[in-house]
Image (cartoon, rainbow, N blue to C red; front, side, top):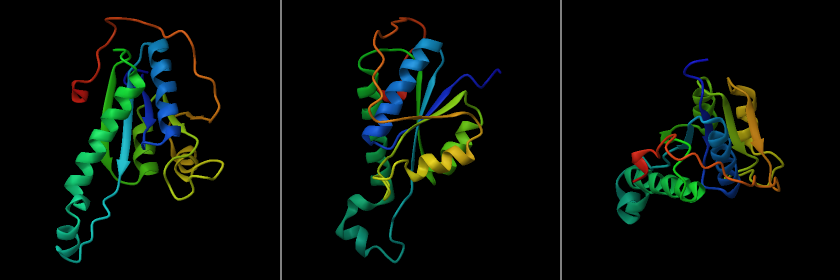
Length: 168
């Protein structure tokens, strides 16, 4: 299974996705395999002219992308908790979250998701992105539910891998 030893995690900045990322990081340490944290986004720029962006320049797609990139790096840093393992790769992709994650799952050992995120149906029992990923993914999908106890006893394996320099 060369090329498939990676855990892909959907990250959207929600508590549920951070919980999924922490689970994947611990599992990556245990298995000595890298974790690929993926955040998908869609631009909601108004294409009718420069007026709305002049009034609120922070809504310009390049500003939104920069902010999401910083948010993604901060979530990963926070979940890493100062450890340097496992090897982590981060990616911010423009597109529908379920489509992006399903595509990334084709080369993964497992796709790891939180049970709900920031979408309109965030109060549903299982978020719409997670549900769509379950149906579209090309690897096993693990949904980390709220209330699942954190694993204890971090597996410190110094020197196994280093954190992606993109996080610096």
